[in-house]
Amino acid sequence: MSMATPLNTTLQRSPLPLPCFSVFFSPFHPSTTLSVTGIRKRCLRMVTSCVSHSQSSVQNNGVTDAAVSVRNQIRLGLPSKGRMATDTLDLLKDCQLSVKQVNPRQYVAQIPQLPNTEVWFQRPKDIVRKLLSGDLDLGIVGLDIVSEFGQGNEDLIIVHEALNFGDCHLSLAIPNYGIFENINSLKELAQMPQWTAERPLRVATGFTYLGPKFMKENGIKHVTFSTADGALEAAPAMGIADAILDLVSSGTTLKENNLKEIEGGVVLQSQAALVASRRALTERTGALDTVHEILERLEAHLKAAGQFTVVANMRGTDAEEVAARLKTQPSLSGLQGPTISPVYCKRDGKVSIEFYAIVICIPKKALYESVQQLRAVGGSGVLVSPLTYIFDEETPRWSQLLSNLGL
Ligand SMILES: Nc1ncnc2c1ncn2[C@@H]1O[C@H](COP(=O)(O)OP(=O)(O)OP(=O)(O)O)[C@@H](O)[C@H]1O
Ligand SMILES: O=P(O)(O)OC[C@H]1O[C@H](OP(=O)(O)OP(=O)(O)O)[C@H](O)[C@@H]1O
Ligand SMILES: [Mg+2]
Image 1 (cartoon, rainbow, N blue to C red):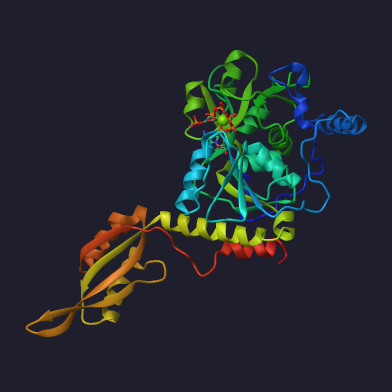
Image 2 (cartoon, rainbow, N blue to C red; image 1 turned 180 degrees about the vertical axis):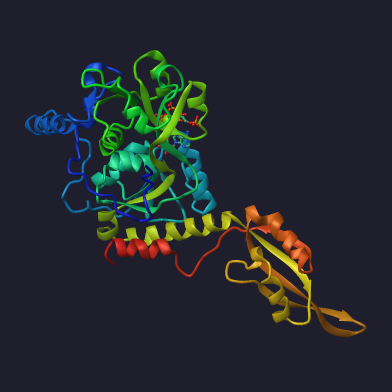
């Protein structure tokens, strides 16, 4: 089942946004495992214990009902480390929003192009937590982290769900040997006679919210979870777990550890996303304008990144005739149709029009095919250049955001 978050949707509020959840799990310790059936009862117990021992409880920055705190700067959270950090800065640079960070250990920085905005470098999960607590207004993180730590909170809004990096999916994987050799789907896994209330399927994961939720939604009863911070792929071979639920990109780590994905085992598709706090967008002065500018720059860059500009000369009697010839070829329509301009040549002292210059945008993937189609209709002198930005009249994501905010 794919749970890819659709464009600009608000995640559903969970009935149990649990502030103390992580206290429950510790690395691969059987006493800290959690059964899906027992989850609600134990969560309730934990909430109760958090309330009754509030003096000593650990706050996990849940949403508070207070009005947005008074500050003049808009705060944008960016990943401080890990594989998303460099790609995020590169993307912003490509949008002419370079981040000026004096040294890598400094956690606050500026974007000179956005003078009312402060950048705060944080770990991805803390970006989501701080969006919920009101300590950040905007952030760039993976959709996996938004789902895991946002837990369906309505205050989180996904402004742009596809920033084109950090592609991966969250997937259940099992060994490709032993009792799992002929198991290839979630259904087959669930039907294995081995899993009972006394001996449930043991899953190692860092996704302790999404994991139990996924199993419950798929009707898998006899399952427990344990957690660790990395190298989960080792858990089955070490005998600590039967399966793992972790991020997969190239699939190399699974393969190298003799694990395989199974049909129906994908929990969600993820890539980097621009996320905002609903309260910040509706209540903080300047936040909506800032998100509009960031969104426009991102859209213009990402749209252009997949396209080339192609300029070619075509012999013809007039612009309409050239256009009609171009339209016979499926890849030559451009974004809104070709631009065709006369080329004025001087021959025997007289100015005449024998050629027309055509300008079209074509998808990078279709480059060679398009050049062949151009030649087939009489194109010559084909010039191909990269496109930097495509600013549309208005981005569809902006109108969706406004309607999501009720504006
Ligand atoms: N193999 C991968 N390929 C592509 N993107 C990935 C991959 N693994 C993780 N991601 C994305 O990058 C984000 C950050 O992952 P990364 O492993 O860099 O940081 P982390 O797990 O928070 O840090 P650490 O692993 O050091 O604790 C993930 O939330 C996910 O969105
Ligand atoms: O499918 P692949 O391309 O092999 O990538 C998948 C691996 O990448 C992530 O780990 P990461 O490299 O972040 O290490 P970590 O476990 O220490 O977080 C993820 O947890 C997988 O282990
Ligand atoms: Mg990692």
